[in-house]
Length: 540
Image (tube, rainbow, N blue to C red; front, side):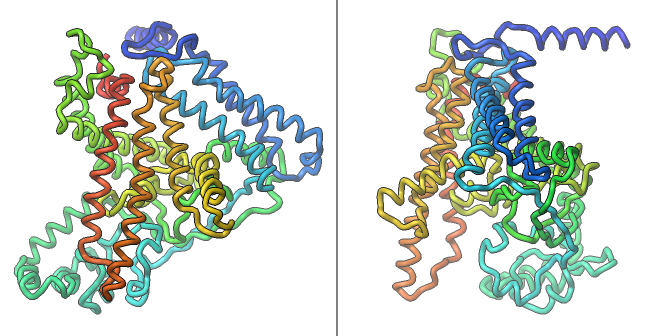
């Protein structure tokens, strides 16, 4: 037993230090294998600089000499981050080399933002935020249901509706939710007959109501039991209050904690830098470790496995022999994959990435849960809406996808885009510049992803254009979507009809799926060229 473990450790060590390139990896010419010092030095220097950035006390933090030392350290950290993907690669992995590009570019841009853009352009240094959570009633009252505007809760519909108040469901015949289940407090008995009758909107007609009433209660009980099993335990519904701390950090230990928390917080969680996807509403939930484990086992891992099997099957069937018969391996996506397989691979790759992000998010949340209620243990939802609730390209990128890079795109894309639109159109500072905002954000995302995939394509920008095209086309789609939606609403309003129709949601769903899958072929083409699909399929 001991000898086998020792042999495994030896093999792992040899694999890590092996300088030979993994098959399919084409690093930037002149780059060298990543060393431990090159990987550790940028975040370490960044952390030391952050120790000197936290606001006073002590007063000498604001002295000229301390600020000079701090800025020198910050410039050094930024240069080291930007240098990472240009001078180094990870010979054992295409994916890690790709991630090295993301880390280097994100880290360098973040350092510039923290130490120079925010303090000197906006006179803002992030302050820590204290969160207080108070229990709340899970189901809103009938008056609130009638007046609440769409997306006023941040696009997050109450996702835990299978524990409903009995009085709410039986009072109104046109309840908002069509499958609400009434559970009496302190009881496991599910009230189905009246709840089923009252949950159907009147527009369905008498026939639909008769069909609903003809369904046996036992069948409904079984359905809702399965629904609850798949859904898992309910997180605690709470109202969240965020208060900015003043006079903190006070001690060296506080300052060290402040620096570590800010360095690790991509979305600004726990700070006044919090991005919009984290704080859409005071209504939120406190998921326990059990909730996250259930989500991993019942939702994330099955999606991850099925999507991976699809990716591997398509690769083995169509792409595994690319280059062996004299064809160009980098053109295999267009030459070897039929259109249906291209769309299927694109969809499977998107589902795989969503599930992988969710898995990583949940595992970190579980690992850091003993640190609660500290900021490092606070993990707001990664996705703000269920994918089937998304009805539009803009809503997909706003609520259906993660926004871990939101701050980067805001500072280096959205703000410059708004500025450019106002300069070109003569708009005032307080007038909306939505076109520049959208295009700036998506173009910055296009550059970040193209820069990263370029690192595994031998530094060739033209081969890395696939991801750039994908994000740029989605930005244009958001602009077109907004213009068409406004025109349709105005036309309906002029005719005296309702601005919203029952089929709008379905049109929006078909639209965003068509756009993301159609333009996503560019993204997948880049991943096939770079060998990332090959590595995802575990083909070595």
